[in-house]
Length: 145
Image (cartoon, rainbow, N blue to C red):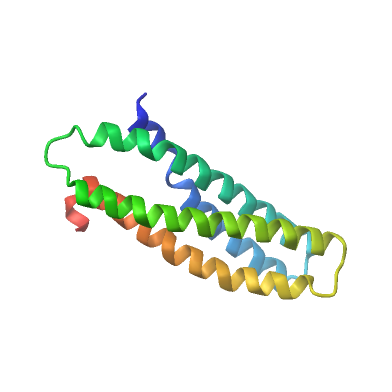
């Protein structure tokens, strides 16, 4: 396996995991289950860890892909820029989820407000996830350009 392979194995996780977390968190509010909400917060934390892993393997993938004829360095650069923003937002979602997990666990009065804020913020994160995924796909998949 090379750097590109490692990146391909990991790069979908930071996009998929927040989608799952969002659905679980919304479900937790619908069924009024604190355990389900806590599960969602843990999923978001896992998503932040996955974002770190995807970013960590990005340079290795870039080194491999730059050697392939017909690959646009400008597309790689654009993807890298989008990925850095997305990763930062994912880290913030993960840290905020730690706070939400703690406040939920301690039954703080503001715990639900944090949960609602995380739902809204997750939609922003997913917007950047879509941009990152699309720009990454454009590097090798000319049919989506």
